Length: 157
Image 1 (tube, rainbow, N blue to C red):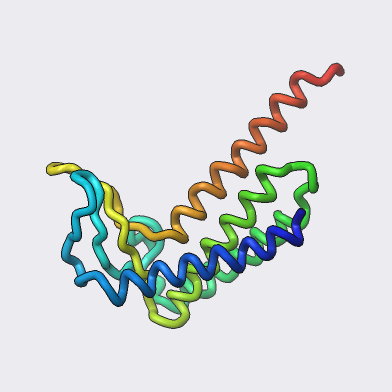
Image 2: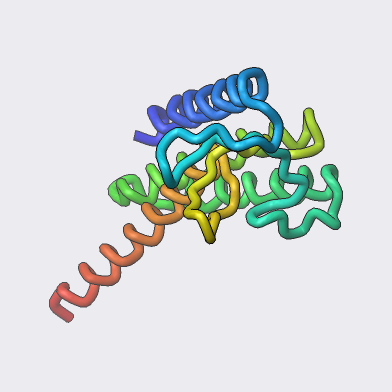
């Protein structure tokens, strides 16, 4: 299963980079393109990480930090048992998303973001496909841990 998930990582990176290429070449910079009343495409550049945190580290500091996180995620993934399906899928999603954002940081000095959920008085942070992969992957990893905890509580002592 892990071999197939390596292929998934490559596909995720391609999808992420293609979506960022499309956004960069088709959306006006920092001008909303309304899709539905609460969702817009809004091209912007993020020099930090989530919610622009750590932008003080500079692009190369964030490249190094992201690369170390990817290596650590690979380490955790290798240690994950094969039968932990959700965790294995989650690690592939997190790694694929992190590599997608790492490519942006290394080549551009920022991450291309373009999804924006909002109302008239509120808006969420602008994010991208890679961020979505990372979020869903983290949920899958945590979900696997909850499944494991439930199984261990249900198992006879």
